[in-house]
Image (tube, rainbow, N blue to C red; front, side, top):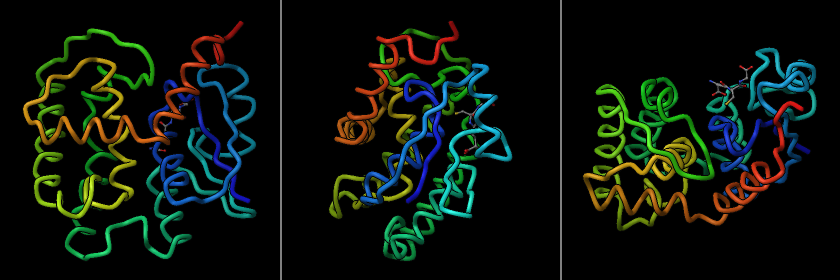
Length: 214
Ligand SMILES: N[C@@H](CCC(=O)N[C@@H](CS)C(=O)NCC(=O)O)C(=O)O
């Protein structure tokens, strides 16, 4: 049995990614949730992760930290089905996933993920540039792959999980869309049943003050 250690569902964008990959590919797992920025987190994370960060996946004697490394490990568990089947789409899916993993610093800093609620926060120019780049990328790829299905490359892939937290950021901060195609894809990510379950759990955390130090 796999164990995925995650942070608060309302806050932990990196945790959401592998959680969605597990759900979308029907891989059974046990979820362990630690409250970020609390003494309990620092006490318990050392039992699981050498980096003291979430997410971390434990599969028997194997420990995998970092969301993209976990996604790649899960891809092997499903015989490569978590990336697009054709080589050109797969190469592009890997490129945009890596771009998400190592980029968009201004967007991530100024619009931290919140799975619930709304807020109005003005982005600096570099944050606006990140928003524009995400929307351009979504517009171009969705326009190319629309006939294959509703996800970024048609069928669900790791690329969709990598961009899922951005869909929640756009929702929370009320991002304006420059493209209807990009706006429709954001709705696809938000209204996904697994995403809705994550959002419902996030709302329970907020309602119960879960993870807030006493
Ligand atoms: N590159 C890492 C980032 C992981 C990360 O920054 N996790 C944050 C929460 S979303 C964390 O564990 N923070 C706790 C801390 O730094 O004490 C990944 O992709 O998994």
